[in-house]
Image 1 (cartoon, one colour):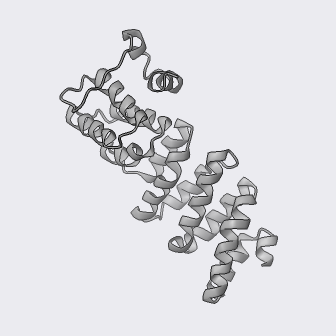
Image 2 (cartoon, rainbow, N blue to C red):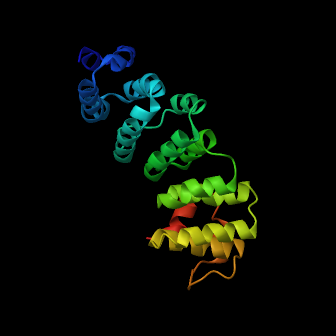
Image 3 (cartoon, rainbow, N blue to C red):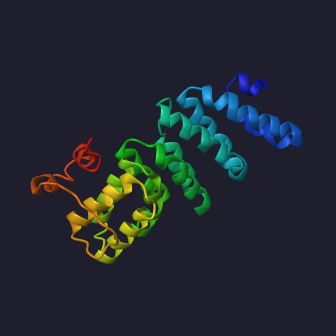
Length: 218
């Protein structure tokens, strides 16, 4: 298709509604497996801005899957302007899909914060729902900071700990152990031990690097 070769997002948007079912499937396959994995980052987000809002049900998942793959290997970064513009009219389902796709692969807390501000309700419950399942230390740092930002109650923090423990993975357990000591959370099931000096605990929220060294001490 000429619009693929010429990287013409507007032409592609105009073409897609005119295709037969079979042609549409071919175009979607080419988009997911040829165009999006290989285009320059600015072209990727230009296609996102033009194509996805025209039919998010058909195309958001495709773009997010490729974006997550490329972010994970360092060939793409978030475009905050494009994502913020899309979120202004996105449905709650589309916002949730975006968070579920991009948060687990994002390595930078500041990028995670941008995503949360644009796509999540501003409550500790909503942040926990988005961040707990990620198994991502950068996301857990943002969750730790959110507990303080939203002045989360002991009951809310304990609930988050229980959600993390249900994941049954080493990073989540280590994070819970840190939370337990830092916030003085009691009556958690199981044995959670953490050998950490008081001066280390005091540095926990001073930077992401300090947090990471404590939660992943190897």
